[in-house]
Image (cartoon, rainbow, N blue to C red; front, side):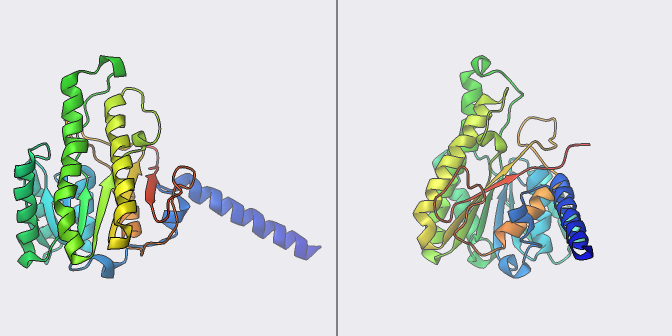
Length: 285
């Protein structure tokens, strides 16, 4: 009888612990179970981050620097990029960081030159991780109220520029037989987002493209991770959104874990090896 009571008490304790962890988690349990990011996976590797002048990009840059990665920081704002670089070097004096400003909405020839510059940095080591974090988000507006100008502004950056940059960089990765594209998408790319119809459409487009790319390059040594944060803190100025560091730490833990033939969103994707991460941050204070 005592044994049964003990088992029951332990079971209740275990259930309570799981519920408490679920209530405070900022990612699903599959991600949380991976633990801390593994330094050996990124140390000395070149990591290129777009939208690195603030928010998620800035936090990711600091996290990668902590793990010993060589960083290429990009956005349109060179002043902010230099600020981020200075802050990281101040915290990690040995950090290797290059600033490469450009506009993701530029034409293909311009982006081709940018990719060539990125590949030539750090003694032409080549980009190992491409973190597509840059995004353009307009103020909330009903779907039928959106203008053609707004549509083009969002898609030129969020979709066309991101895909073009990927197409230009991928051949270098394929030649080396390794590489990893990390795409900061959004939960708006998986479910309705009232007031964000065009932004949501751009994220659906990214999800479709990169999941397909993943299936095509899987056997070539190229990995793709699609990350879908939920509602997060953002700056009020126009342009890319931002987030707290919790989501970024989980992302790094996932990126530094060898690929398995499993799916982190079984209800939506069943293709072998496809990674789709749905991050649900804690409620904003």
